[in-house]
Amino acid sequence: MPKKKFTAPSTRPLLLKEDGQEYARVEKMLGGNKLQAYCYDGKLRICNIRGTMRKKVWMEPGDYILISSREFQESMVDIIYKYTAEEVRTLRKKGEIVENENFNSEESEEEQEDAFVFEDL
Image (cartoon, rainbow, N blue to C red; front, side, top):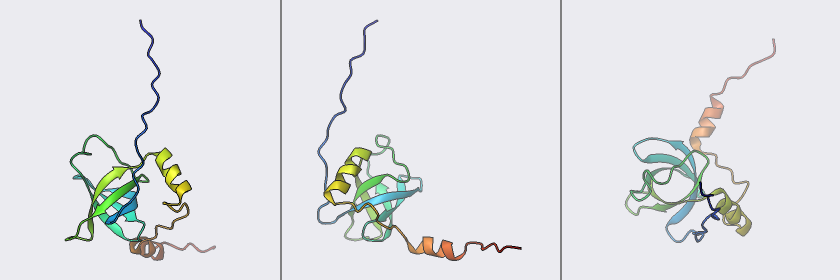
């Protein structure tokens, strides 16, 4: 039986954001090729997974992505690229992604207000 050769991981060029693009973090999978993500401009958006990425690139909550906004529909965006963990570390070193970025949305603030408070008896 022949031995398997070790192949180094392929290196792909690191994509940085351009005009009309933004970094985001996946928060929730919605189904139907859509997901919910917090963008670095502070907005919660519904993202559409492009056809070239469907069933090829799998996304989970916590993944970092690059999105492209639509001119005619600001709340809906398209996912262009999914970053690997190594690429996210490189973006943080370059200062593109702020490490301690606070992704608080209006919904999370409402959820915090509705939380139960237990008092000592």
